[in-house]
Amino acid sequence: MRMRSVVGLLGVAALLAGCSGPGNEDAPNVPPLVSVPTTETPTPTPTPTPSDPATSKVADTLCTRVDQTLVRTTLGVPVVEIQPKQLPADFGLPTYDVCQLALSTASNGPVLRMGVSVLPATKTELAAAQKAYAATRAEPAKPVTLGSGGFGTSRFVVFLLGGRLVKVSGPPATPAKYVVLGQEAVRQAPGLPDPAPVIARPECERGTTKAAKVMGAPAIIRRDSETSAGDPVCGWITATGVLYTTARRVTDAEAAMVPIRKAPTSMSVPLGDEGYVDTTTGRGTIRVGTGKLVDLIPIGIAHPDPDTMVAFALSINSLYTR
Image 1: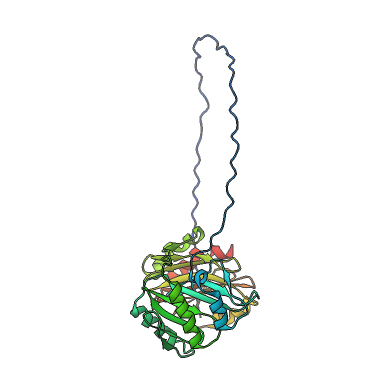
Image 2: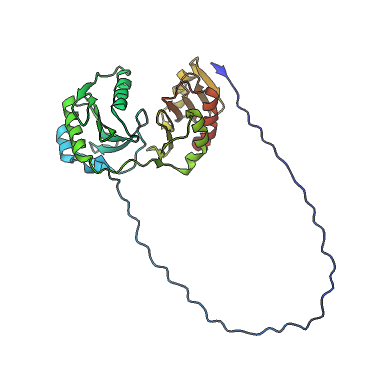
């Protein structure tokens, strides 16, 4: 492991200004002013008009349109309930805007996630997504006849539909059952609004300039949100890469840092209680106290410059450690 220090220099300048006292002036000889009383009609205070109570509107997504009875019977679950809170994007290549259906009454029970890619896609992006999944060496995927083609396993299907990639994923079932759920997504997708290019939070802007330097270009898509614990999630997306930051709560953050600390490619950075940037992947990890880890994750960025990643980490650090 090699160590580097990051030092900031602050310069302070002080300016002293003097003020001269008042000069003597001769007052002109004028008659005294006479006060003339006036009567004013008081202006009535307007009565405030009560505003209509704010109402929350659930976004129009696949989850709000899907046949919940079909989902329940297909997966054999007791309940299917929409979870209206906005979820962080599913960052990757591609990145998906996702919604979620709870499949039990338990707070940590299984869920069904349905996502639409934030960027347009063709069969080229579909093939790249399948190749990336194959590299994980997880359950082998099989072709599925959905939309303009796709692939799936016993836990998900991904397919091309209307110039976007659609992903339906959830608990273990069978490939055939996920094809049924994919068919329902195909039926419900027409008329869905296009993904918004920018979903940004002001607090994430502190990292935007440095993020562009890491990625080699300004982001064309922004995806900011928060975790279930209330920690910020900031995301910058280009046509070829992704950079995002998030935080996770863990039982023992110090123990979780041990393998990162010992990795030969870890470069120490003075952030949080302990921080490292991987000089090969560019990934950054910052420990905050004993129960929180902050992740800075570049995807699809070939050989991220470690110094540029450190500069990005410095720009975003205070968002998680304040």
